[in-house]
Image (cartoon, rainbow, N blue to C red; front, side, top):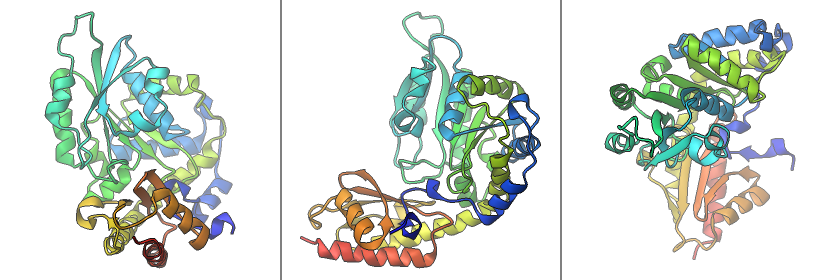
Length: 358
């Protein structure tokens, strides 16, 4: 079976460029972006800055680099510390780059089921004594919207503003890992700029649900972006005729957000169907808000674990899903997943579960 024959729910990063993206890439006007003269990149960055309500924006190759640049930029002083969730993507899935490359100390806060960090938990971890040589200096708080590990949960405008007020009170910066920020904006039906109004920096991924082949954007003040450009260069992210992929990014920002609502509907339909399967533990109303679906296998009812379920679906039914623990699976919807695909997946999941009931 060829890779194109699979129904791929492992991630929204598996999305392929749309026909409109491919045409835009073919026709893209390009220049040398390290010199700052690629017109398509400049157009994309200007669009992103306006979309996010910031003074300027910068195109970078990946979301990991975007977050790393922002953290290094905010925490440039020796002995800096950042506060972030213990289930955050920056903490778990970016190879500890902030500490490895930036020598930034990470201080974690318990992540709540809704993706938030409790305000009192953040405040308790802020180093209030600035001149005590025993401690690092708190420079930054990082949030994540939507929250990956918490199942695509959405942080509300009110919550983000409350964290922003706390940061302002203590004179520290706020960064938003907005890899799936557009999913949050669509689900809340708010302008993305409103979501990050009180954030000093934001990263936005183009290659997840927005379906571009690569790239992320950083937005902030003009001064912040000037320094971010320098950091991008030293990290090896300065590209040349990158307008070819920036053209796909323009389509991603202008055309793909309107499809995200359908992705969310498909995820909720998927969750509702899974909830009906004996041995599948999921609460559709509580657990699923956007395009990420986690479910747990009840080991008292099903005799195979998550890896075995995923293998059976792949080998026997042509379905790819993610495994997030011994008994936990992850599925993500995206524009390449149709309602018919969801219905087929549910049928085959039912077959696998019934075949392996205790």
